[in-house]
Length: 421
Image 1 (cartoon, rainbow, N blue to C red):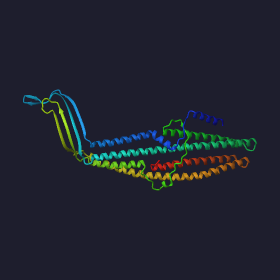
Image 2: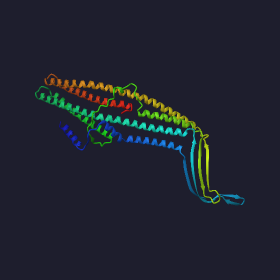
Image 3: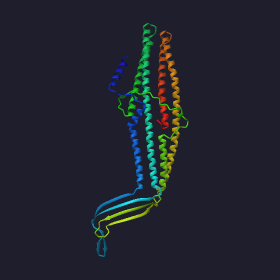
């Protein structure tokens, strides 16, 4: 008993330096986690990067304007030969510059395909952010209700300590009267020590739960507050056999990627198609030997790749295989999501049934413990029966609290499966 009081005192002293605040609801915890998560911040960067790729793809529709300039210093100027004589055609040192405006007129949809591909990949990055957010929210729910459950387990373990200490006193009194043997007293003392260990283990579970929740919501490790028990159960209408997966981030992301793959196939197939363009340029080269030092010209033409080995055909096959791969991934993800939903719904129903059974069992366990203790005090029952009755009651309470936790987590998993958490 002195050891337990010392440990509790140490915990209280440690708690004096602990940060406290008002009540923290689950919704507030989710909002704080969304704002503090570095993983989500990283995912948001990915979405921004993908959006900039759209701007890059769109820029090919605009004219390309280039300016180039420099100064050339030659060892000797270039010259024409006329027999034994020669005539220089340029200055040995000269400045130059080039100004050009290049505009693609028509490329058989290559630019449109690149833009569509970038746009859909940007959408996929946004949907991936949503999926990461849903995963984070599920972790928060598990940590939040894990703390509430662990606190209830601390209370159950503390109640067991109280009951075992009461039984120890009874056994001590009966032993002093010479009614029972020392074995009853020793058994009671061992059971009290075991119950105290259970309290410490449950308290440690609470502390670890707080450390994890504080990490998720961006709070300091010593942050503590009251948590509100809020049922997050979906309505029975939502527990349908064929769930709506339209809000599931991963599925929407893969659907967008499949669409981008379609554009990638179109773009790869146009690699040997010509590109028609217009060009306006001004070329200036300082040369005292010639009359026209600046040449202004406008060009309309085309360019086409005639042969690049097997690269073009390989790019087409690669794009087609990538599309097929992502289509298979999409179908597999849809099936796995339906399986995840069905399992979560089943766990939800089982946890609800377990709660109802455990509620009745707790009432029966309390009555069983009362009768067993009365029998022991009347020298009819044994000390082992009292210990077993208390152990059974604690286990029943533990099963009840864990069933409540499983129910809330299963409800969150149902919402996670449909992207509505």
